[in-house]
Amino acid sequence: MPNSILALLTIFGMALATYLTRISGWWLMSYVQPSPRVEAWLRQIPGAVLVAIVAPAVFATNVAQTLAALCTVIVAIYTKNVLISMIVGVAAVWLLRLIM
Image (cartoon, rainbow, N blue to C red; front, side, top):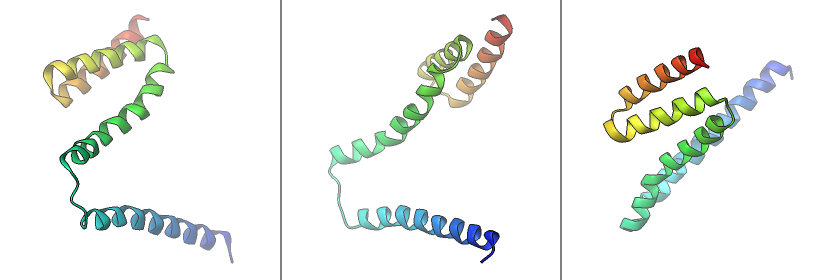
């Protein structure tokens, strides 16, 4: 079997495994009525995952990126506006890289 066919079959198999894993969670949860506490916990997972991905990158970079991330978080807390926070973050990293 040529390598290209094997690679294509591997990609298709992993896509199918990923899809089945995701859809099985939805299917199983359709039979369960979670408590309010469990629902609150499940709503916090996306934010926790985002922090777990972003935090190491923020602290592994130089001072300009770390300060820009801090500016972004502060603006996000005060304005509750994602677009403004992103604009401030990009502007802050650009300006801090220029200065530093």
